[in-house]
Image (tube, rainbow, N blue to C red):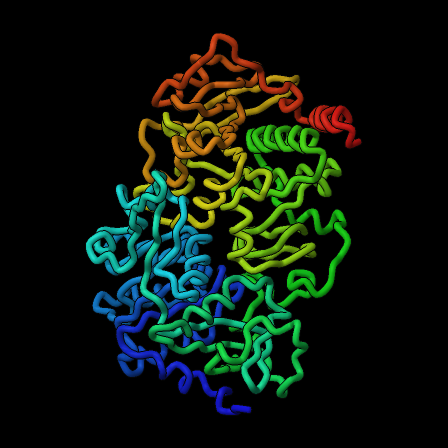
Length: 555
């Protein structure tokens, strides 16, 4: 027994040296060792050390004003800071200060996809040079474009880089980054030997693989774990141990778990989200799902629901899938309203399967999931095409079907899980409003869409700010792709976008083509979107989808 593993935060963090690469777990605040993050920053402010750190996370251990964002908010005000020289963060959208530092070229910033970075920890822990994958080909992750660099200083320094490789005549990408000298992770309980359990956490994330990455040869480093409780030796049930003792060097008990060890942004702890208990899917719980406040959003979500129910009828089984943020999240709400929840086994990137996925600062956890698996394994379901479908949002689409989900000239959010999910899923239904901007007034009733005034920003553009999904790569891989809006549905072929459906009451030239910067392929016969979508009442839509399921023998 080594009781010296349980130490103060300062004693543990003192192993971090100037210039070290530090890995930090965290999907928003879930699995984020917030106390260790803030204590490390306090050490720097008091002593000037450690400095010149390079930080790598499996996602982003922060929400606004919490965790790493709190650190970056202070660093942004200090033009001479030398605490952090660079970061590899798959998502930085919850840190306004980090986004500003990225745009102002203050530190190196790299953004690989969440699944890529999460799996990268597993690969380097195994002694491999990086992660070999097709994810990112033809997108900003491709070294022929940006190679995952989010600003000019990153393109110059190349601390993290993506290399193009050819194997058996096919193109692949090798993702590389410096391996961690020290890893900071989080668990719920550690025994005196250092075995760690995660019974009150919302998921496992990449905690085990990040601890392994720090210990791998040829230069094994240290792993520090933040916990709520310390148990006696051998009192954690064997099957509850997530990180075994040999991987842990130091245990730090947070002094205020309610403040520094929250299950998610809004919840301190909740056994329904940590998988300790399951509750019935009551209407009260279903009310936590986002509901569309605009009829145009409900129309697009309804059209995605129709597509998923057609797939259920075709495959004759519940669908294994993923719903992204934006309009796609409303599909889950519609399925609940219509009694179809059991037909959609939906996943959340960091590990939950099923249940009711939360949104906003609580995104990543779910109430009463049927299973919780490690994040790299969840992304295997996406990248390997094991899921049946995905529905994701979009900000921009170009003539080739390339998609930008969130980047703008003044917003660098990072790709999140989007590149892996969209590249791997055999069927992806992108869903969003046809236009954006102010003054949109769109209504529907009587089976028709009424565009009273339109948005002043086109979303179908000649070029997108960042290519995060490659249309040509999807065609090459034989994927089924649809782009769904409230007034039109597009497909994708080797030539690019094809207009497949238009809403009843819509003029193709005036309401669709005139609002696009390019002209898609328009066949001689364009189908009409189902009229059931264009009523104030959702009854016609339910009748339509019920009929699909009855025809498939599922109702």
